[in-house]
Each structure stands twice: as structure tokens, then as C-alpha cells.
Length: 338
Image 1 (cartoon, rainbow, N blue to C red):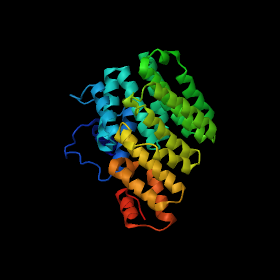
Image 2: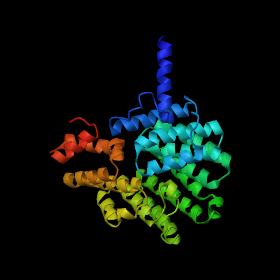
Image 3: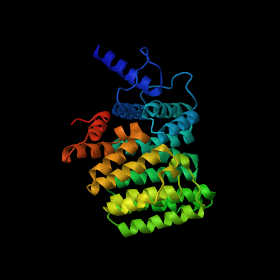
Image 4: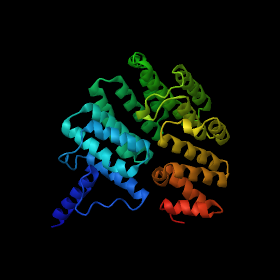
């Protein structure tokens, strides 16, 4: 009896993650934090092979495109259905290109949610399937996500090596403007790693290289599916990197030089405001920090309420000093206790 109940529960989880309507209509998560939990659970089960592709499901390429749109819009509720379904259907159809893209996106999402154990699993599969496609762009992007995870693990030398080796791939230099943009994304990643390693000068030197690449592309935005590469996205990375290097005043200066409306997606624009909030928090400017967090929330509520780094910032504000109605309301909407 217990085994039947367990298998029944697994079937419900798999069905929900694959987008199969449940008999009750499958009520959506009650909170944004619950949507994030549902996304992680759906990815875990899809990656473990629990559940099968339901009849009539869209093609993997279509699901990946829809999942990317949901990611860029910070729509975690939609992403919790679309991305696990993209992985399941990709495996069912044996499409390496779709699987490479789906696993790259899964890695990005899992890193964002601090689910690093699953992130390593997704990154390894992204690299495996990207290699099978023979597409240097796919392999380079898989390498970038692997470098991010290495950085998160504190393996700074290895993260730098992965990103810079991928950027030096001759195949990217013959891949036109998109190849140049991919090199720029990898150099940006290396710059951020240098900041995390405490090498502010190295970070700024590498950022200068990324600026030069973006300038050579005449200010256009390339590779929107990877978050975009342009002078504006390089500047956004500089804000994050200065924060990581421990210099919030430089981060705020970099932020003032950037119009967030120039960033290509809602996800990138929300990151701008959360990075500004981080700099204000480090500077002890509580009211400005809360205003930046509220701006991020208006831009992307599910992202703001779910991302662990932002939740930790809100929780820290609650326990470290005077609270306001705005802060307490933001905490409540984020399902935080105070």
C-alpha cells in the first residue's frame, strides 16, 4: 500500500512538471517561493528520468524557446512546466541540440536558485550534448555555465581557465558577430571570477576586453538567448563585479552610467536593480536599498521573491535595524518571517 501511494505521488509530481493537467486542474503554487520549489522539483525529476513524455506534447525546440521566453520574463510558474517538459521531450526524441539548450538553461536557473548539486548535473549534460552537436557556440555556452559553477564552488583558477580557454577557441573567431559576442560573454565571466578571487585590477582589465568586443560589434545586442551581449550588458556585469570585489561605491558609479532600459530582457533589468540594492546594502544605505528592491520587485516579482540572494538581503534588513512598512510588506510577499 505504501509503495502504491509513493508511486502515485511520484506520478503526480512528474505529471505536473511535464505540463499534464491534473484531475483537479493542478492549482498553481500559492506563493512565488513555492513556484521556485516546484521548478527545482520538476527539473530534478526530469533529469532523473522520472515521468515520460505525455502524448501530444510540443516539440522540444518549441518548448525550449517557450522556456527561454519564460526565463527572460522571470515567469517561474511557466518555467516550472516548460523547462522540465523540454528535457523530457528532448530525451524522448533524441534531439541533442534541444537537449544542449535545455540543459544550459536548466544550469542557469539552478545556479540562480543556489541549487548547485543539480546545477553540476545539468552543466555536465549540457557540455555532453553540446559536444555531440559539433556546434562551437553550444559548446562555448556550456563551458560558460560550467565556469560559473566552478566559481560558485570557490575554484577560481579553474573557473578562469575554463572560461578563457573556451574564449580562445579558434572556431568562435570564424563564427561571425555571434562568435565574437560569445567570446565577450566568456571574458565577462572570467572578469567576474577575478573579482570573486579578489583581483579587482584583473577584473577591470578583462572587463575592458569585453567592452572592446562589444564596441567592435557597434553596440548591437547579440545572443539574446544567452541573456544578451552588448555595451549595456557588459556594464551590468561591471556593477556585479565591483560588488563582488568589495567596492560598492564603484558599483554604484557603474550603475549610474547604465540605463536599465537598454538591457535586453526583464531578467537582466531585474538583476540591475538587485545589484544596485546590494551596493546600497553594503554602503549602509537602507532606505535606498529597499527602494531598489521594490523596483526589482515591480520589474520581476517572482524573481525577487524567490532568488535566494535577494531573499537573504531582505531577511538581513529585517533583523539588522529599523524596519518600515514597505520592507515588512516586501518580506511578507517573499514569504519571509519577521
